Image (cartoon, rainbow, N blue to C red; front, side, top):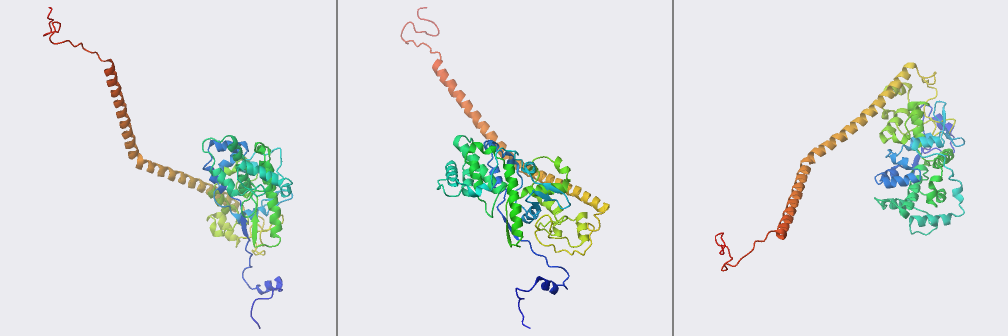
Amino acid sequence: MARGRPPKAASPAAAGMNNAGSSAATTKRPPTVQTSFTSVALQSLAGEWNPEVRSVLKDVGMDELCKIRVLGNTNRIFSMSLISRINPDNMMMDMGDGVFIEINSREVARCIGLAPGGGRKIDIAGGRCLIDREDLLGKVHGILGTGMPRSNNIPVHKVKKIVQGASKVAIEGDERTTMKVVVTLLASSTFLVPRGATAKIANELLPVVADPETIAEFDFCDYVVEGLREAARKLRDDLSCDPPLVNLTGCLVIPQMIWLDYHEHGRQGRLLLPLPRLVDYSDMMLRGLIRKHAIAQGIECGLEIGDIPRSPSANIIGWCGNAPKQHCESSGAGVADSGSNHDQTTPAAAGGFSDEMKKNTAETRKRVLESFKAAMDYQYQRREDEFLKVFDSVRESVMGEIKKRAAENRRKELEGTLDFFLAHMKQHAFVMPVFPVNTPDAPRNGKSAVA
């Protein structure tokens, strides 16, 4: 019998029969995920955000974005898993336990702090067929001062250079108008509604920034929702043909905040949390909550069981058998086919977790929060100790320099006072009369010659 690869026409059923004796079913790897979503651009501006720039962001309704704390790359596989759970028709996201939460302008405002309910809508579909696109491009090029032809697209790196060269003291006049356009384009193309593998400025933003004084009149919350709707619809179409590469669009951190807040605090408890939510979500907290909840809920996040903290909930997962690394929901296009054994009986399939398991899960949540708090306290204490150590090391040299400068200033003041006194004495000193020696009027031994 000839050896080699099986023919392409071989049926999947035959392949399954050949692998019937294997101990575990073969699982498909999730596709490679690309996205231009990043908070680094906003964080790079945070170092330059003086009160003047904050006032510019307030003029366009984006001043809350200054509070963002997420610095690193987002978990793309986890984001893809959550977006696949969004129904683009009604924007309801499946929480995994039969509960659905609608992603609307109010949820966007709760997550990132944008003001909802603007009077003017940003038309994503209309941006693909702008009649006056060239005129709008020319107007925006003129505002930014790029010096490029009016038919050329506006590159993002040009916008970043304008921010780097902005005034550090006062932003007024034409520079303030330019900065309104710059911060709007940069925030929208990299954080609010990013598209493609690399950041680019979308056409629907041209009518928004063509008149910088009316930017605050547009509803950016609705714009973010429509961007996520487009991302969910595009992901469903892409996953239907089992692609090796997927491009994610939209603000990826919003579904993560909604999903993690729900599983961490409950449906009603999440509504009592401080706003905006991006203030609480640091890199460490985001990674910790993903490790805590994603695997337990069967959400693909690119992590293994060994990546989550050893706790009673992790022991429950280990007792259930191999945790599902891929999860397919009926309400959305699944990320990949599940590789777990469906004949295996789990506590959830047998009627839910027991009271003891629920108690252990509650204790685990409390321990994780305490661990987060202890870690943050440790970081603050370490930074304080480092500051005091540096201060003690330079205190003597600083005090010596202060004493030296004080003595020098005192010496200069004394010299100036002495010079002033001598000049005053020379000008106003009493002049004694001088008499000839041989005259009879000259005093001799204190007695006058006349006397």
